[in-house]
Length: 144
Image (tube, rainbow, N blue to C red; front, side):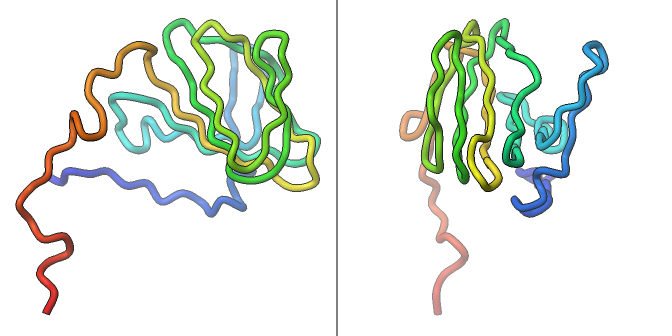
């Protein structure tokens, strides 16, 4: 049994070609690629996202239990949480509480690319050095 799962996605420049369907709302949402099922994730959902200039979410949404972290990699846009509109660009990182009503749009001239991590709020128990264990093993073998 392997201790990992891997998903080879399209290059970031092709993220915009992914589409999510929301049949109960008759909505098609471009530029979103979910990884939970593809990687058999058990602690969070991760999506890869790209919006073309002028594109944005066709609705606002909130969550019942999950907070979301948005990590912007490229482009310029606006991110709305409740009644506040926040400018975002490469390097912007936003955490939204579950009840925050959110939407985003690309206001720039290039793709707005970002990663979203969704996890149950207040569930993190151990992290970084508290959860990590250094093992007695040479990384990548012993150098010659």
